[in-house]
Image 1 (tube, helix red, strand yellow):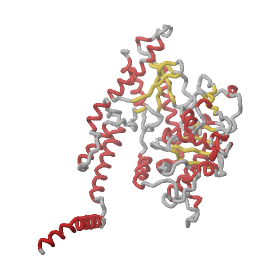
Image 2 (cartoon, rainbow, N blue to C red; image 1 turned 135 degrees about the horizontal axis):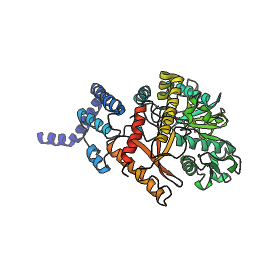
Image 3 (cartoon, one colour; image 1 turned 180 degrees about the vertical axis):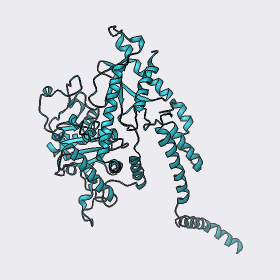
Length: 476
């Protein structure tokens, strides 16, 4: 009998083991799967690393803008491989330090490489709050504060454009704002396009300046209009579209102010956008000139008839139930092409609350003043040559090294001059002293594009910029 019981027990043991495994799994559900206390301790340490290494050192002119490494070197230094087992907190903090160390410090006062730069502490606090609250901007039930906040911020931006009403959303970048404008324009003229697609439409043609942003071409491809149907209208020597070159009228006018829109905040400079109120839509990126932080891109519509909702709404039953206990007009997410949508209004709202419209105006005026100072200094120094007199805060110039001065008439002058900016750029990045972009344009050889948007930039930084260009390029 003992032998028989033993055999029976052996036969029943798999079920017993499974049962014990299920009980063990269920007992795991009795407590959280994360250690909250350890997590908070790590966060405190990580925030200290962020404050010391990214904020303080990242904005210190005595520190490098970047610590350049070739890709193969950087892979070895960072150890990017993902493994089966986790790492202790101390090792993770070291990785955080390494990430900051080898990243470009876009908040550095001598970072002039992009249309965005600098760091605003209030906006950064808004970005941290956004990440911590981790919600999506589609319904009032999960984002009540931000639905109302976005409405207020968009209304303020529309007011600056010159509209008393309208609509809009925050988009993931100015390129997407441009694509929204193109899609909404098509839908307004041909509402059947939403259901029937391009086959039901005549050939559509998109008119844009030959100097327009490349997202217009991408948008034409993405929306099925086709890049062959983008007509690029000739611009003048300053890059402005020549109205007389338009052979047909454009029924819908879209204004791309992603870069320059913030000039509307300045009483001194808003005339640069005179007439913008006549546009049907405006793309505006506060993350550029206002130092809000990436990303903060508004698509504004003058239309207040619900055009965005009609164009993009799908009425997903699991999100946009019509019988909710509150007013569903506040469930604004259905008017976008996205489902999940990041909260991008908080950082701008908090910055605006901190400094007010007057503070934002001062920020814009200071950027213009920096550009004016640099342009005047370049005219005083040998070797600097403006591509054009700056009208905005884009400052385009050549640096002509001593070896090329006086040789403008030589046939190889242009190609040789075109090699100067890339060589200087390589040297400055490998030294980490500063960063500035360059590009060719048409028949013009490579020139530098200097942009100042950071309110932390001082006259000393601007003088350093000019001195550094001279130092790095004097022997070329």
